[in-house]
Length: 220
Image (cartoon, rainbow, N blue to C red):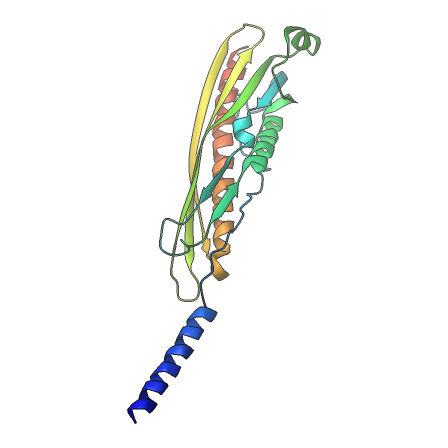
């Protein structure tokens, strides 16, 4: 009788262990690529676009914006989320410059004096990324987990006015959040992170655009 009980207990253990292995929570890597910002609400000093022909440079720090993160909570903490925001952020900067200036000319390096004169440039603006810090956490829900992501972004614009030779700097920062379901195997957290990055990118570029307007318009 004792032998039968032992055999039964062994069989039950094997069944339970097999079930656990079949449902092992396998770590996943969810590559996150936010969408670029298209429409922005940039309030300029005189309500219109900044006049003149302005060259602008997107620093490599913008194009290289990326960070590998994990959830700060227990929920979804097993997975890795590489956030690649460089391409979308650079595209968003281009959209902001085109919306802000009557003529915005993308350059990879500062124009020489001869080039600036031949192209009748008003000045050159360099956009740099100072801080890019996305983070998120997830909690358990009745049907699926619920995630909240927050992204901190800080940018600096350097303005060189060719007419006066003056150089000025303006800075803008933003922290925006997004919420949503974690989805199956926490895949949905990637979308929440991406939305947070997009919101913060939009906000920081709108603030930076307003400050650029104050500097570039007041130069007249």
